[in-house]
Length: 525
Image 1: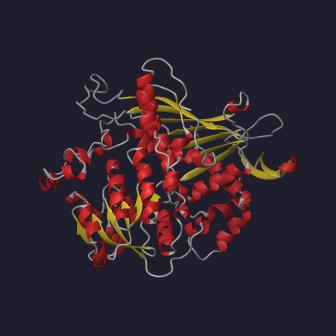
Image 2 (image 1 turned 180 degrees about the vertical axis):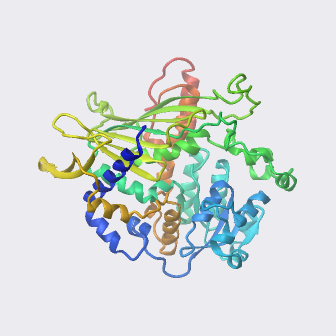
Image 3 (image 1 turned 180 degrees about the horizontal axis):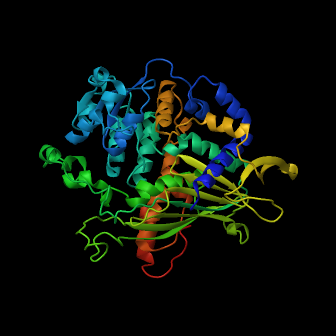
């Protein structure tokens, strides 16, 4: 969506205008609250008692972001573990920026030097009693999420693991069952569940301001062709190679290169759909009421890397296994959808997702198209709203401000109207202030709530992104991978979403492919 700076500002003001109306009582409470925004929005409070004693397993790119965002009032980091010596050093020294500042700057050198360092997760877990450990945060390559989480829960520790939840749905179900067996909390880091921006956007959707949603377009586009670069392809530091040579096999990796460049290989990563698309599909499912999708189809291929003659010079040899271009289409049930009914089964919302490596002209995010308005969630930091112009409607589009007026018929649902003005209203200004100047992506809030639930012995279901919720996101991402791999439209089965049913897409789909190796095949249901 190409917009001028002025149109973007109007859209942001429009969003705040609508939030200021639909959540006016809530906004007033937020303004008067003495707790932080996360506590106000997501139902937790200031922690009573000592901060939860936590160990961090994995201090790479994402692990360092979590270290940077961790809330010391709720969480006391007592230990960190990483196979790579350079990652451990980076955890304390940081990258010299606000995103990964390092523990020395975050906590001060005196406090940071009390944190124990381990060269692997097994030693950290074994030292749990000595450390007084209560929980771990896991930010390691995808293939090791489940094995490490299972070890931690078996040892009696609560777990917050990075997304995607696991490398397979079978592993997801084992993790959920282990958490129930050990009565441990299992949280997964889909941080949009703790984004104040997304929470307010979802409230607009729920109140009907956007009307009926029939299409959501999501994307995460990057350009690794000009200049020739790839943030997922990293060099192997000499220090790591020397320290880990011959030692990584016992931790689930073929060699040090696979450990460092795990996103590029099928055995260790889940490709673009798992690493990037899962964020977008999580957001789409939130806006659609966390309903499970009906079906998915798509195309994926290694269409750029390793192809000779592309770009200003022949492409370098590239051994990556994951697709570098993916395009998927999900079918979600509409409000009146009813499976098997000839008419009601036509009521669907289509969600498309694309991730490419050759063009970044549009920023990542989600565009929600409703019959009355369009909502653009841009880079997790901005929400932009425009009124739809149509029959019986005056004004609309990216050049006009809107306000929320009237109620429509007996339903009492708020509706949008457009008008000419040069400034947002007082309600819009108040709503904007209630969300803070710096938009949080939800990392800090998810860790605050995780610790709050531990300290208050909350049930597992209190977590906004518990294992069952996160497994649904994993099912969407990994089934999309299967749809692209076999070039088939796949219908989702209810049994896949039941953690106590052994049915999983990776087994069911393979069986059908074997039964119908060519052409179309019967619906999975």
